[in-house]
Amino acid sequence: MSIDRRTAIRGAAAAVAAPAVLRAHDALASSGSVKLFAWGDVVGAVQEKIGPEFENSTGIQIEYSTFGSNDEAENKLKATGGKGFDMLWPSVTNVPSYHQNDALQPVDESRVDTGAVVESMWRDSIKLGAAHRGQRYAIPYDWGTEAITFDHSLFPVDDADVSYGMLWVPDAKGQATFRQKSALMGVGLYLDSIGEVPSDRMLAVYQSEDEARRVWGACTKWIIERKANIGAFWNNATEASAAFTDAGCTVGQTWDTTGLLLARDNPNFRYRMPKEGGITWIDGIAIAAGAENLDQTYELINFLLKPAMAGDFSSRLGYNTVVKGAADNASEEYKKQYNEVYDEQTLANLWWWQADTPFFAPVRQEFVEQITNA
Image 1 (tube, one colour):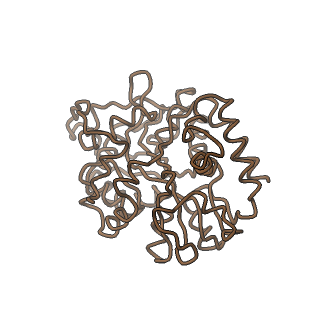
Image 2 (cartoon, rainbow, N blue to C red; image 1 turned 90 degrees about the vertical axis):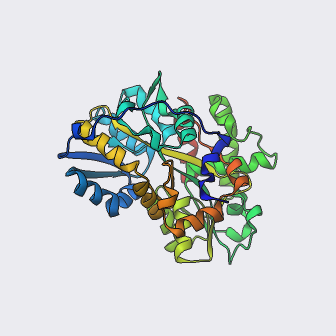
Image 3 (cartoon, helix red, strand yellow; image 1 turned 45 degrees about the vertical axis):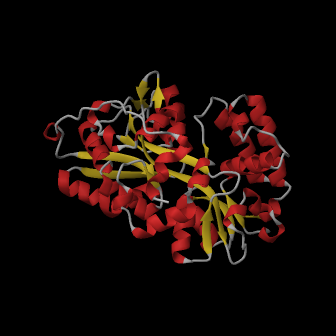
């Protein structure tokens, strides 16, 4: 299978993207700065090569700030009234939460090289939360999965049999790691698949608060009854890796970057899609309502959309980008791992986070706290 099969995600066929007419680059600022607020691992990857090349070619300096979760980013931007940063890197599904406080501004698509983005990803991101009231607020950029990382020497499971249920088997006692709010979804998918807690493949938690409480309540009870298996919680990529390297965990529900980077250092580790479906996210680029350096921000956006830059991004993090031609500019190691993890079947079985509903995050947090304090 070719790595470019990512364009088949969600069964989307290529569509015609909205036309975009770029302003002449000489009309943009060739000096100044742009304040970037992004995930810690994203900032680390950008600082390696993309940032220095951008600064050398444009004269624009990047000022970096990091966050470890969507909640942290959202709360900080809301607290400042959308000020203090220019460019934000949220999950697309989290973007609707910013509209309550008008913390983001619409994207001027005429200033973005929209043709650089895979058409299906550009289109489908709208349904996932990138648009509001007919205007786009997020440019999709990188996508990835949350699935199962495990030590294959201790859990000799065939790829087809990998499951979220692996975290809860007796052999995983004290060795399982996960992010609580994601484990609620992974356990839910598992319990739905075996008929124990029907949830329409976890779409029920988005339908109403009552349904969310029914499903998450059952998942929380199930997890707490098996809390002896929990070796460590994680909330960001650094903590997830440390759960394996420092806390002795051998199986976990993690982001792809954790599993893929662990596998590069230790071939016993594998990162694979569970048969219930890999949980899939897509992050994007948004512009803060109070952004003060708009010309510089659009300059950085278009620089990131260059295939060479997107390929470097994927090579360093293991995340996939929506940029056309990025795979041709990525490392051979990245291509090899991609093809080990994804094929036509696993891509067709992905489970996508949906756009947040008003009750979703606060109700989920109640159950997260129950798991954390059990």
